Length: 106
Image 1: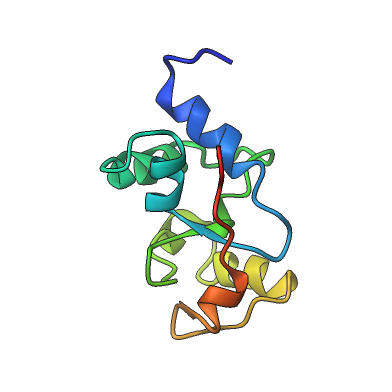
Image 2 (image 1 turned 45 degrees about the horizontal axis):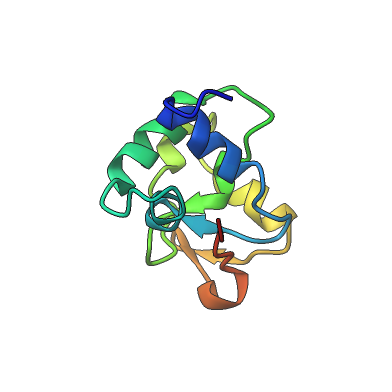
């Protein structure tokens, strides 16, 4: 992994999100020492479209909203993937967000 490639560093963190857990764009940015780069993390997640080795469906905004859902095929694929892991979603919002939140610690 090239240390100077921000997107690849984002993907390395995303790959570590446990099954049944979610994290936020900002939490990933903070873990990488770039706390004000949540938007760049979002761009990285969008750019990984189609890469099955990156669980992009587990990355949501800081309030638990499925803000990246329009980047997934179909209308509710992101929600369906999360629900298949036991995470309840209503109106694009993760229910009991704090219970499911994973804080990357690097």
